[in-house]
Image 1: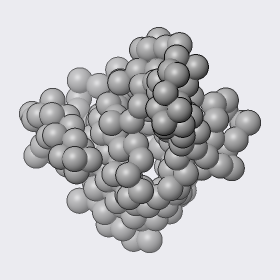
Image 2: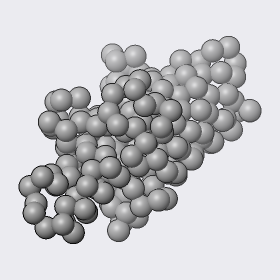
Image 3: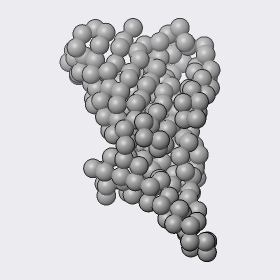
Image 4: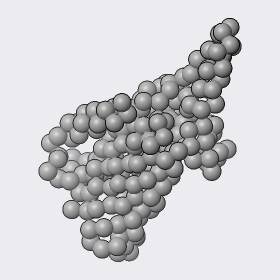
Length: 200
């Protein structure tokens, strides 16, 4: 089901950039620590409820001329598939890249994603059935309550180019609705990991 969800999301996102598919710049694949505990207390929310491993992929396009007014960001589509059965997501956005010398660079990304996790979990206090109460409590402690189906995604990446085509990256991303796209729940999600990038 998660594979179907992610594939559908990416197909829809790719369709939105249909006019630019011939201008692909690079593809990035990676492994992330999903809902990493080491962010607990730094950015709010209850970190570690879904700590697990995810695989990620992004398809990045060259910046079109009509985005030159915004400092030429690169459009991208991508997603994350959780290997532990937790939250997966997919979406699209823009990234701004700054090069340092010849080999180092940094990306700042912003976009929107849709996910298959919990918007909110049922309140255990609203049930009198012991079995159902136990299940609701379990979900409260093991599922992130995002508060909305569509979330903002912000990301920060630092990369090193091995050569003209290949690069390695460390990356961090945060997902939440920012009290704009949903609520009142907004536990959010923080992921960090490594990626390999292949430029065309």
